Length: 194
Image (cartoon, rainbow, N blue to C red; front, side, top):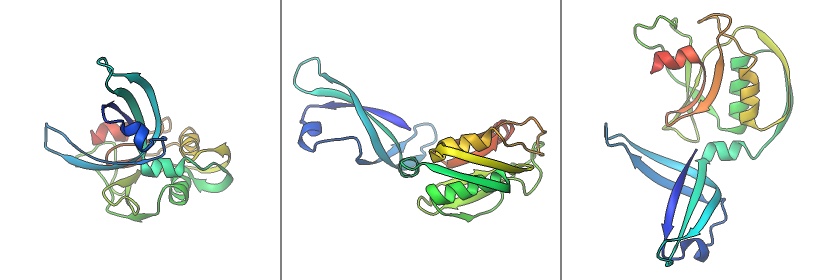
């Protein structure tokens, strides 16, 4: 997610008009390593509308989220899972509401003390092939009912009930999105990847 402050002296917001559901395509280039990313996002709101200091235009903020997250979170789910581990539930929810995925090579940082080979699975996101879904395995089967949550809320609901054998029984899972894709991993996994 992010926001862009626009200085509009051409009446762009009034001529189109912008309503807050438009698709936003842009490229970002980092100056440190020269990395360039293409982003497809959806505008979710336009706010902080004011006149420019000289009175000849408008200043406003466009808030956006990724296209996949937008598509997923216009839905709500009421469902139950019985006898599945948390990582399997997360994959099922992701494939139903975000995008289908294709397995890729497993991810194990070199020289890692937190991971054992074969623990974290990386899936290529079919609707956004430049990005991936990373899922760290959980332990123990769950019996849960998801009570009318958006897919991202459902993922966080599963995070609160998931544990990992890789780092110990008290490990905490998180579900979040970055430039690289989506992650369902422990704090220890994030420290190791960084």
